[in-house]
Image 1 (cartoon, helix red, strand yellow):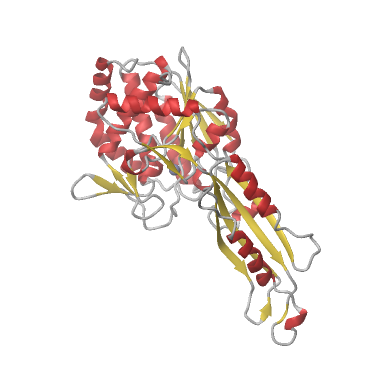
Image 2 (image 1 turned 45 degrees about the vertical axis):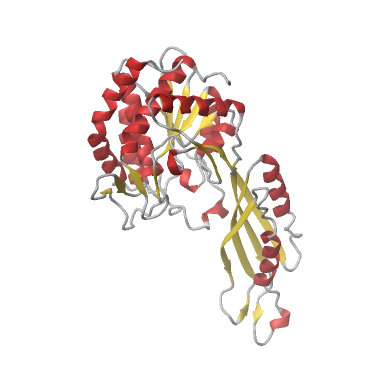
Length: 409
Ligand SMILES: [Zn+2]
């Protein structure tokens, strides 16, 4: 039972005329710098989005940010340590009926708030535009707002919660516990990450984890006392050759190393070196194996040189499950009812959908807009996807609230 033709036409009539307004909204969203825990920008953008949700009758619950392991901050990506911990919010519209839907979006981008990439720039042919976070995921948040507003405008009253965090791009360390607590209360999860190339829906995602390897040796003058020293750099390098052999292309296991740190001057035997890295794995077994292999690198604390390993596997793998597949197939049928296609694909990229599904919520997570160049100064959006994906999301939300997922065929 798909969304009825007359309602589809009403929703189309509500959404398609808003194209120019959506582009203007997108320009406004993109011009608010929300990268690297830039609190003023995050606060401004959060207030703007929650005000639109509250205008639909939603109430807002705020979650303080949890702290993050300090060794991760050495990677240089998160903002100054004096910044407040990023908060997350959940805006909930209560309405009669189940099942309930959890939408998830991140307000943050990867871009330096003081960088040169700050504005939406529309291409001369009017088909695409570039801007920081234009697809990842300010465009995705915008289509969700327009879908919810259009459903209300068409008299469709459905219950939903829209979770908005501020730290997805730095690993969701501050908001994962709030998202995990919320997820099991819902029937369907939808995250608004950008579509994969060709508009595809990601139905399988690898998991991801961070690690840090520290090496401690003994400093010495490189000329006078070289053999009295113990190089932490050489010790780390020896360990890294073992790390290099942990990747396995056939099994989808990857271990990347960088950045590295070690030594102070060429004439001192270095007493400290460190390497940070990232692992990806397709399933819990792969995660366990990589964790065990990394842990096995550590030495006793008083060994000379000594090796210490820290790790945090913050994003569990998101393999396809029967419930998630039914949800994806329902989304595809909604797309087909609109004359759109929704191919499926797998990706090594991770997002909050990994956390939602691991917490027990069947989730599809790339229902946002189409574009590319994510995390680069060429990030771009296909402007037609604003109205197309808003309409698809509206039809899917209505269908899920009324009929749930279609039975497997
Ligand atoms: Zn994203």
